[in-house]
Image (cartoon, rainbow, N blue to C red; front, side, top):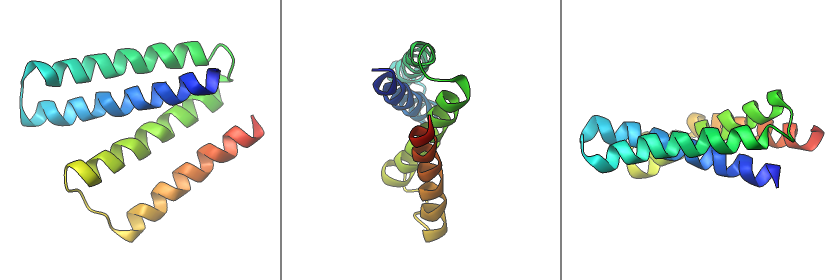
Length: 104
């Protein structure tokens, strides 16, 4: 259950970052809701997950999911670069997160 909460925390992180990006484009109420709501959900689920998962592992996986998710959102929704090197480094972040899960 803790790993599911950690995944939800990562998704909240991506929503919060998308809210920041949207806020830079348009200062409408939905931007603020995404930003604040995403980060509140993210930190709440992260906090609960850390009751069962070690802090170092939980934080590393959470930031990895946020990094990869935010990068993918930027690439597919905001037209950011899809350079092969960028994809390689995303794969490296993902493999590190999987590695931490396997040894945790």
